[in-house]
Length: 179
Ligand code: HEM
Image (cartoon, rainbow, N blue to C red):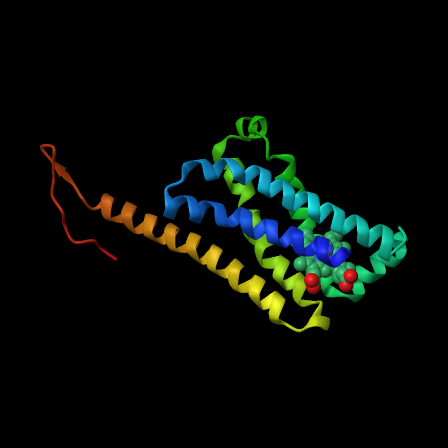
């Protein structure tokens, strides 16, 4: 059961990260409204996944859990991913966006990208079923993160080009972009 709950958590994380590219490429604005709900689904399944590990697998034996974290690095990776998920879920509401301010909120929520890398790594520790599933997760996560890196680079170039376009009497004079 722990495994299928872990799968759902990672599925929802990747679906949440797919919302922005889908919205940008399809122009369907309302998709953005689904993002928070999908992110909370990810947290919900991750919480159940962790609870089933703590309760069913380890019978709430905290010493055994601590030993397991040290013995199996993939468990430590999962714990890190879950600890990063908690503040995201806690600050997902509109009131928290207002309280933190857009920039700080966005910076905090960028840790979703780290979780997207840790998830497949954690999953790869389960080599019982072969590497196909973690590889598929890693490929999807890499494409979603790669797209964001591409957009950032395009934005940086646009801003750089803008900085080298002096205005003379309201007219823009294009000059060569320095690199
Ligand atoms: C305290 C944190 C976590 C612990 C202790 C933990 C523990 C585990 C364990 C023991 C397994 C193997 C289950 C089995 O063989 O029955 C597993 C698998 C898995 N976990 Fe976690 N996990 C944690 C966090 C997470 C998080 C945050 C995610 C996703 C965002 C996640 C996604 C997965 C996935 C996808 C698998 C593999 C499922 C498969 O092979 O089909 N885990 N985890």
